[in-house]
Image 1 (cartoon, one colour):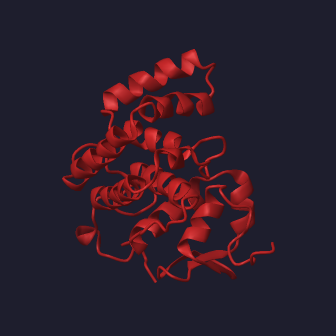
Image 2: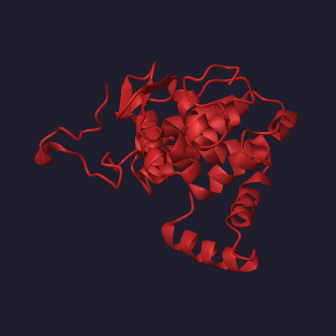
Length: 223
């Protein structure tokens, strides 16, 4: 099972963030964006209006959010977020919606091209490539691929790192379910936590942790 470098000597560990895993995820972010772009490229324009797994957002909205949020320089992101908070009554939900519209209004061809351009930069380690950006890409990718009947390809280390970050920093309601339990991905060779295992696919675990599914890992389809 993946241990996310915690057992490596300090001198051999890659740069790390608060989860104890690598803080450089450019290649994995790029892979997600490329997979999303490839999927959208074979869809009809109407398919982009399919409801995504993000409540209230279409596939187009999620793609638009990814195309802006993952590309904008840090300084501009800080300024835009500060201004949008004031303009939207300090509602984080409305701020995210305003960011989504910046990319969602693009024609599909331009939106897909924007995702591919971001992927090129991330693969070259240009811009932000932290676990936060990886989580945004992965969750956005799942929001899009599931409703379109596709599977998002994820490297085990990437899915595990995003799951671990959410388990540590997620909402109280999610932490209550997984407290004193371990989460084990049956298809990705990672596990973390202590206690009886909650075993499921990496995708199912991520969907639960990010509140895209009410089904707790390992509880069965009828839960």
